[in-house]
Image 1: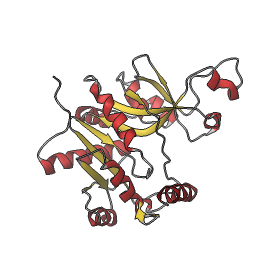
Image 2: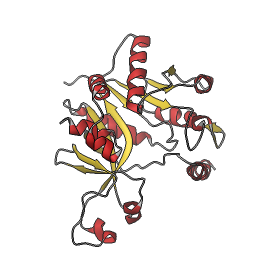
Image 3: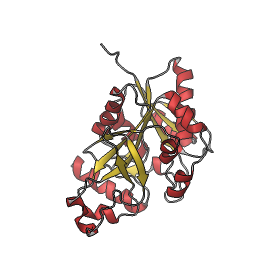
Image 4: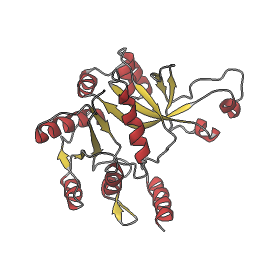
Length: 256
């Protein structure tokens, strides 16, 4: 019988943001954003930490009983911050975990089922990196320049990530594509084994990563595999003041 695997949840939360300064501490219907993310994730993870570069976020997480580690201010990307945080947690707890799940700190509507879906990717013992997609059901998403699309192989490994809609459906008007192809958009949730996280962070920036501005393409270009879980649960990242108001309204409606 396979041994039960242990997972570590890490929520990177930076104070600085070019579009929404201090967003982890912004109020969303009586709770900070980081608290909402943490409380939802704690429904799934017994071992959960916020990784931050700011003492104000440290103080907030401790105020509601959460666990937190400090990381360096400067990191080239969120993956590097996740690796530093994981190594600090391993030192604190004197143990390692089978996989680390990197959860975005600016998604206060993250669904616990999403977290269970990405954890399930590691039921494949060969999985070393994993992420989630959701089927596109609204043709408007095909026109949204902020979306990222993913093509999969038959074993649910990612073939490519692109800011263009893939696959391209030749000879069909774009508004009709969903009737002719299964199209997936990417959700920014990742899981790694510790070794994969170390390997990823040590690789140089690749051509496809730089071209698309999508760091996950670095791993594929290296010839490594990303296991993809298909979820039915979407979420809304908060990048702008408009996103924040949208999320506030949704949560207010839920909690009435």
